[in-house]
Length: 336
Ligand SMILES: NC(=O)C1=CN([C@@H]2O[C@H](COP(=O)(O)OP(=O)(O)OC[C@H]3O[C@@H](n4cnc5c(N)ncnc54)[C@H](OP(=O)(O)O)[C@@H]3O)[C@@H](O)[C@H]2O)C=CC1
Ligand SMILES: CC(=O)N[C@@H](CCC(=O)OP(=O)(O)O)C(=O)O
Image (cartoon, rainbow, N blue to C red; front, side, top):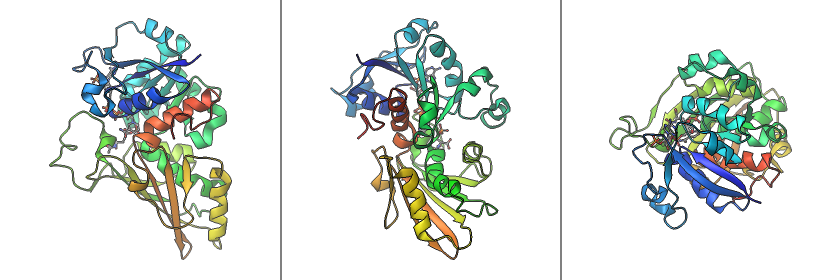
């Protein structure tokens, strides 16, 4: 029997991607779409907001009631495409009612109470769940994902950054005395659907932001186990992230060793495509669940270029990939 999946925050960009993926998923049945209690979109069909879903998914966006018990009891798994603090407060009632949680926000990604005050600006009300949450970087944490009921899906920039760097760090190929430098450009959908001045059409250009203080720097450094310099940029396109990462190699490391390192970790990982030649672009990954990686070396330095669709491998597709892993399905089920 199909597992009943619901999406909370379904009117948002990642929520709509989840609705689309789950509609086609052969094992998960999309059993409900939810928005906030007083949402301006309450009771509208999702396809009135996203016409590309017309006839594919026309389910209504139901406002959440105050008591979530019944919704939690009737679902096997819930995806949260909600803001960090909203997700932090939603998780307990779902877990208490035996509903598995796949949270796309940052609410459970780092096991440290003070981290949330410092980088997210709110006090975490459920620190006990931080210990229980598993970081949903699917290619690296499958064993732990298989046994948890709370997956904190990795962030968009952290996913492409870590997938690019981790094999080289694990194999000891980098000279970590020189911090890896990650420069990444994101499309505007990374900021979510809600209108804001910085994401409005006439304001968007190409600019760095969050310099030395973006919350994804500590997320990347924590899970990578090494410090990094991370600078995000906002570009004038809708979706996709391109990360250009510069790092120093240990003396004598060859291209062959680097290729072997990537092959060791990703040869059997269908959603990470490592290029034999050339470098990826956003064009190669937009609207797809892949993270593409290419590299070039010179004078003991490596430049790695990683690309993903922020709404898919950086969010909704990786969330479903984690759910597939949790239920023991092929990790790409419903994704490619
Ligand atoms: N956009 C991206 O590229 C990525 C986003 N993420 C994370 O995923 C989460 C969702 O992002 P995104 O889809 O961009 O966000 P959006 O702003 O596009 O959507 C947010 C959704 O949450 C709903 N919502 C707001 N308040 C509540 C509430 N109290 N209870 C239930 N639903 C609520 C909104 O609907 P309404 O206000 O009408 O209720 C809307 O459906 C965020 O935590 C984000 O950080 C992660 C990786 C990538
Ligand atoms: C372009 C843009 O604004 N991007 C967002 C990151 C995307 C996101 O939602 O962050 P998580 O992956 O942590 O959930 C930002 O910089 O805050």
